[in-house]
Length: 209
Image (cartoon, rainbow, N blue to C red; front, side):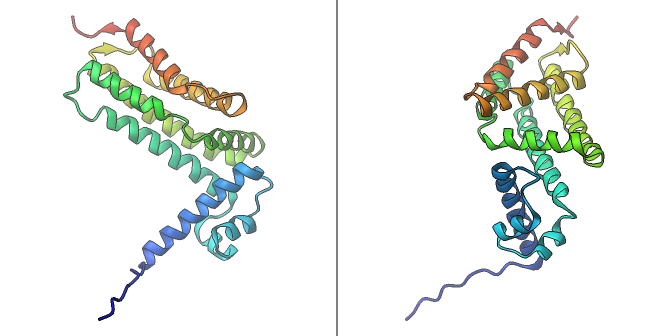
């Protein structure tokens, strides 16, 4: 009796998702290696194992792929942080322990810092791209602001500044530390961010009268 192995065929939707993901990963690799300007659509398609037609079926141009990399990174970051605060029964110490664990994973991917440079450089050169880039950045800032507001509320504290302003500050800090890590040496970005967060929380006024 012979055993037959069957390979599960992907449906149309799954196949399209796979193609898109492979193009995204190929673009990420080439943007880091060669820079945004030097990575052509043909190169990206060939790296992913597809034709240029497959690329254009998923992205209007390289800018759209670069924006997708930014969007997915920021959405994943916000989702991870929101999950930390999802359990409302956690004590303050448990929340900090969970945030410390998250901070330890921050910038684990050194390539993200290089992609951040490519994003900012291209935004400085293309007004149209800058508008889309800023929209994604603003959405992430607002999402982090809501998470920060929830964190302070969970601890019974009033944020020392508007949550959106605090979120923008932490985003700038994380970005700067990420660039430092890529250019100089590994920096404990998560630990430093947590240090600043603990300082802000220590100085915050209690909402309990």
